[in-house]
Image: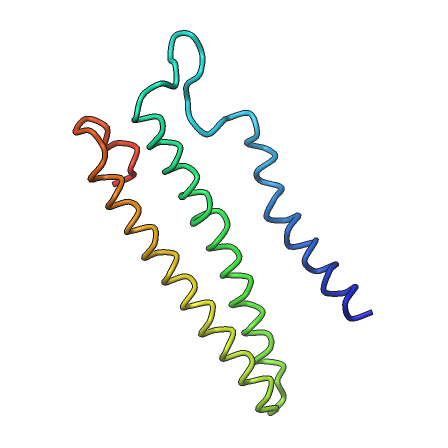
Length: 128
């Protein structure tokens, strides 16, 4: 029964995170691909990489981190003096904070690399 509950909660959270993607399914990752605007330049490749990274960082990592912070806070509030539950909540807080910091540092490194590789006129896709 406990395994079923974990699977059910996972499916609910996954569905909540996946639903916004369905509404933007027609927009595409790069605004090109027709005869008037072909996707054959280096800038479109950089735009694609930037779009995927921004989606992962801002549309997936931050909401998942917020959910985990809320779960850890719930564990801490409902611990009832249990040092085991408080310790588990503190571990979750620490791991989520470290994960978010690693994700942001990775984004900064990739943005730096993309800005170095980009041609001079194509800095608009980086987001700075």
